[in-house]
Amino acid sequence: MLKTIPKILREKSIQKDISELMFYDIEEMRSYFSISKKHTNLSFVLVILSCLAGIALLGFSVYHALATPNIVPAAIAVVGFVVSGLFAATSFAVYKKSISQLNHYYNALRDKEIYLLTIICIDKLSTKKQEEMTIELIRCLNKRGS
Image (tube, rainbow, N blue to C red):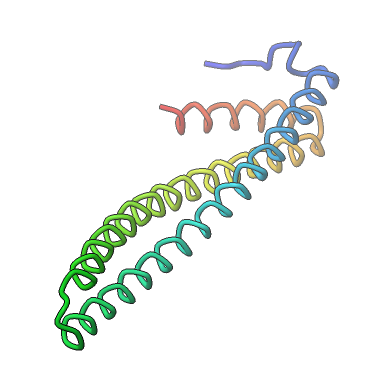
């Protein structure tokens, strides 16, 4: 079991470096989260637009089939409807992946912020309490990782 914290981890310069690294990581995670959020929104808009285009093509093909004796424009519109439907399905799959990625980045960002807040709070304690809480934090992180 851990009895004491290694000296290198008790030094303020190491703690400062760790805090700076965590702040940097959080900023990187925020930027990835923002990019992922933007892609998710664009994927959703693409799904809606391709569905609307498919419905418009279907309406066009029904109108042409009923209004004119020439079936060729209606057949072309049906092919366009099928293609836009496939495109909408593919876009929806991308949207679902984007949502999954967005949730992953959000959870990672939240976890890093919690760890950083914990480290900052531990830093405010007395030296004896800092050692105890740091050991407890390491135990919790090890339990969570395994």
